[in-house]
Length: 201
Ligand code: GLN
Image (cartoon, rainbow, N blue to C red; front, top):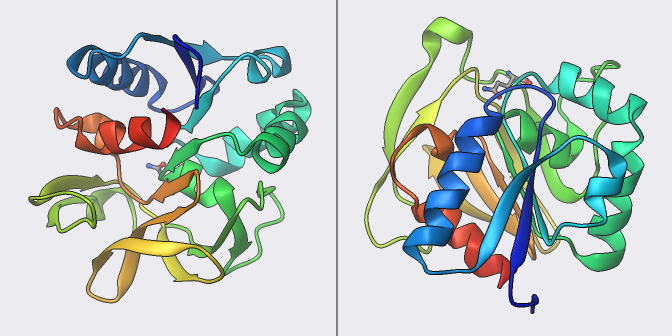
């Protein structure tokens, strides 16, 4: 349970940062939840937040800068010790994983979720697509945007798949952690951000 005004941080290194900020602000407004959303740039910011969003972008780049800036260990610590609610979309989903299907020495994982992820599993940029998804916990279909998206090959432990395309898992939850291979911040539909908000409050 969080204090009267919640603070949600969006990692502001690269990728669709402002889209997440705008979407989360809209979500707070629509649900009448007192709170603020801000861009996280320093490791000190990590101690101030009640929840974290890892946006899409390029996981190699984001991971490199997270490492250099000391943000990585701080995030890992808060997830482990304080159960910090965290949502990772696309590249963010890659970073939350405990395992990658291929070994990329240029990506350091947060190793937070019991998931194995394959990067760029649907092909290159031009193979980007939209798809109506059935998602556990949502009453109707969600129009999901996939851009060089990863796939969650498998989950184990307490991690549960929430959405699939054929047999490919594209959304999963483990306690306070949420991983999505698609981009809910690129739509006008706030239901995924609301789902995340309910995990925080
Ligand atoms: N393919 C990218 C990666 O592996 C993710 C793409 C995205 O976030 N839209 O990091």
